[in-house]
Image (cartoon, rainbow, N blue to C red; front, side, top):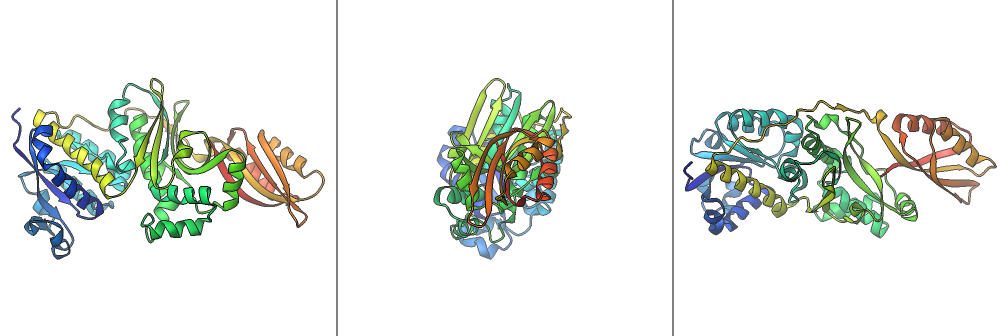
Length: 429
């Protein structure tokens, strides 16, 4: 198949990531023919208001406020969608695919909710649909799961896939900060949005867990399938206690295959201090993968930001261009041939860390241990510290237990005469 001298691209969005892609393609201009056999030309860029972006490009005439200037242009082979959200982005991507245009996107919200539909549409039309930047910014995760690890049965993925929360938790763990103080610093440095809910409540990580799990287990997993808890209830005492026990705390996105059933969850976890993920600090991301052939690997780097994300988007663009020139587009479909049942959180088994305040009376430990034993819960470790007000603090960890059984025991402890407060309940890896 004859190679095209120029492949024309339409860019939807010129925000932080969009401008990073624009700059990255400019930096790669002199190497494109050698790398790809074609030049890449950004023919049109969709923006909200042309006047607001005219000073960002050499030729403002390439800017447009009308998406159809890109979606309906027969000269444009590839549409790069970087506007985010699920409404307009879905409409634009669907129309582009129906008009025979390949898609590259960083839109985790859309991929995690309607990606299955758009990927199937692309494959049915012999088109590429690439979304490497949707999970961990500049860290290659999608392509390794699709290609490099294809010879494995992947059984577990643990991911620190949200830089904002990891920055906050690093400050709390390493500098003894409270949550609010660490969040303010994250906001001041631009890591946290004005409304940080998506990050700190685990929603952003949940979208990425859905995407990774779909690829790893070849089972259609969507955002609503993922159980999600955030970091807002964590305290300085939790980190001090975790450190005393040899752990740190991270917000973990988890995909796990157990007995041909899938667990997909996001929640804070105590991670052993010698585990590779425990050493991932600040705004860095990491994805830890276990496969039957490869054993354990970890992918690490910057999971967000203008240029790291632009790196992943540009890599996807280059792959599409190579595929066009070699006549091999549309080779990836959903590959969701498994029908594993997705477990509810009640069915998941975990180890737990519990910190509680109890009355300083004879037999209190026996009551706590006995209540847990009623639900077949074994204690791995227990520490009791006396307070100054005729109370005591008990810190314990359990062996692996069913979540529903564990919550049942907690309810009985809360109702007992000896327990004044259950301060923290955190899962343990």
